[in-house]
Length: 385
Ligand code: NZQ
Ligand code: ZN
Image (cartoon, rainbow, N blue to C red):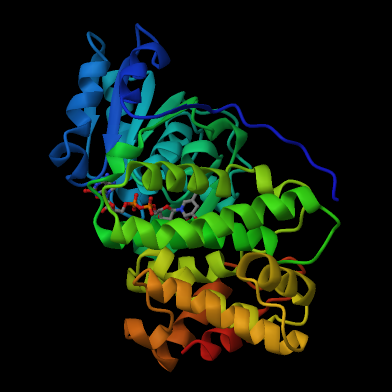
């Protein structure tokens, strides 16, 4: 196992009715900016529930944070914070609203041009405003991690930053808040969480059996419950377990002491920035080709994944790997998510554009061995055309 530091200060308040806990979690004398997305926080009643829980506190609202939150919109929230002397932020929404709030929390106290937060991968962040979140969409793990992904429209750039200063102080996870999600978002969440796990698990063995078995347990739970969330959309236990799996998939725990890949995510970010495809769908259209092209370096873990998650043990290593890649593709398709670039109207010309953007953003040595160069990224995309 590799050496590691583990730090995660986020308080989780999990269960039905837990929004009422906000009265204890948010400082009594705070002037709060509630940040939310398009219309769902209002139409579902969650925003009203949050405001009721905040009681007499002074509250200002900032709505309109997009899916794949933009620098352009978020800088407007930074202006509101400065004009209104806000001292606490509360994100109400999915990964986009929470990621956006992390950026706003850092940008409001940043000296210089806040886009440098992204260009430095968060290295230049030295402080951030305190904030918490009310999660309405299980998917990203943003509610319990220090990462954030921000898009700058004018540059067609979607970049990530990480900083210990942007862990949420707390996150409220009420599974009943996910009943209003459209099928498409439920499916996106399952596939995103699945790929978060494979990015930290499908690399090479480092004798870390606890991390492996945590990862395999989370993957098996997604395989079992993902389809149920679509066929039994009102089942509270299914929603509760999915919510917790998605958090555990990317709260840092399973990734400690093991190598990480993230090439699928980095290529996926370029596809979202260029063509506005949902984040999870970009992952589904890349992962099968990624595993196929890189099967040699990932062989031991792919065979272990096949056996322990899917029960595939018969045949040569290559036959086992072919079968498990197919199973993975079928699982995404079963969730209603297509897995080829052409399913989304992308073609060879799109591949040229994606590869150019990877180059422009310095994404030229991706993966656990930094061997995913531009030529390999092109091959991976072509494999999944
Ligand atoms: O905008 P509104 O009207 O609120 O609608 C949202 C949005 O359109 C809707 N929604 C959310 N909760 C709902 C609901 N609709 C009905 N009922 C509810 N309870 O769902 C739509 C999608 O929301 P979004 O927040 O964009 O989805 P998700 O949570 O999947 O977040 C995706 C973003 O997170 C980033 C992605 O790149 C993408 O920008 N990621 C962040 C990560 C992190 N911080 O660690 C890791 C991930 O890899 C991911 O990259
Ligand atoms: Zn993701």
